[in-house]
Image 1 (cartoon, protein in one colour):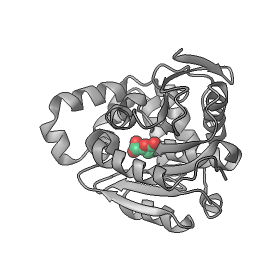
Image 2 (cartoon, helix red, strand yellow):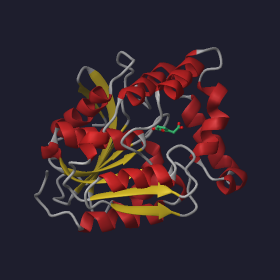
Image 3 (cartoon, helix red, strand yellow):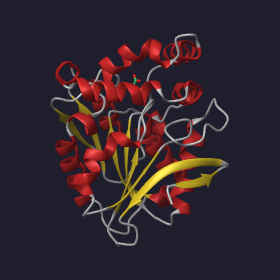
Image 4 (cartoon, rainbow, N blue to C red):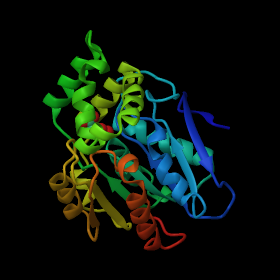
Length: 269
Ligand SMILES: O=C(O)CC1=CCC(=O)O1
């Protein structure tokens, strides 16, 4: 099954390798994307892990629910989906808002988390002015399309944007086809979430990783996150913007594999 009703909302997801007994990786994606961004990472890791990807509410083929959202709602959707699929503790790989969902999952359901890969994310992203401006823009006449160029310039390196014209057309389609209310609803969750105090208590193996040309959560912000988390590793991926699973999937897959090797089986925080 690719659809499950969790907390009253149908969530689109894909599960690979169920019942294999392999360690579990869960991938949580970013604002304005769906789980297709993980494909080139997943194909590299599929033989070694059980893998869950999903579209958070208001994105992809998942239901809209009732925006605006809170980060706790996104977190509770993910914990509900993991419980529903009986996956047990997992390494959570979260990109941007997906990385905040990962932090929130560890806070609210530490029994479900063995390790964290926090990719192009932070303990706090942006401020109320930024997110309220983004909400007004996408709910206005221009919709997501009106700010798509600016978003894509932060997501992808200049080289990728210039050379990968077909891919850029596809990723633009993905972005502008997200429901504006789902996008704006998640902007509200980002505006209101702050894990600064919580991340200082993290005690599971954690990698903080960022594309060297990330224009949304730049390396100095992700380094600040890594410095708050006891024992966290920090890596910079060359030749990537805000979405390394698209631009540098092999490097990111290697880093996920290395983090997974540090995670004791059976352990959660
Ligand atoms: O849209 C952006 O600028 C990038 C981003 C911020 C939070 C998120 O999930 O994506």
